[in-house]
Length: 129
Image (cartoon, rainbow, N blue to C red):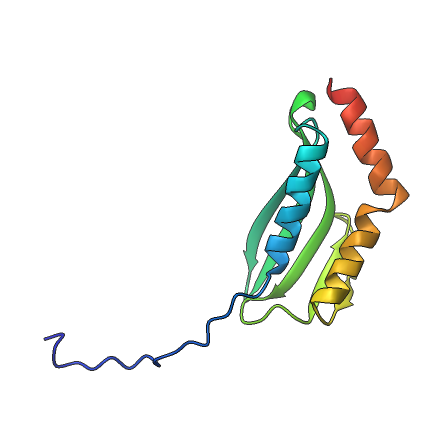
């Protein structure tokens, strides 16, 4: 039977090796883990929200009963990455928009280098030992 039914898929899906927003967050989590020797861990979780994906970057502290602190959420369509919205902290419902990958790098850099983020990492690190 399968020999009589033709393959209707296109020959090429146009696959590319784009850097995904999730991969960008995972790299930042990896760097944090290395720099704090896993005392404060960066963790990226992904959820499906209707036709969107949401990636959350959190700080997790194993030495404090796996305390978790959300620092950034990114939400984009399943079909394309940009434009996307990012949300600073768990309670930010308004969000900010990024039109492309460079804008996302700039936004993440700003959040990670913000004094509030640095203060939380420092505090969690000091309390985890």
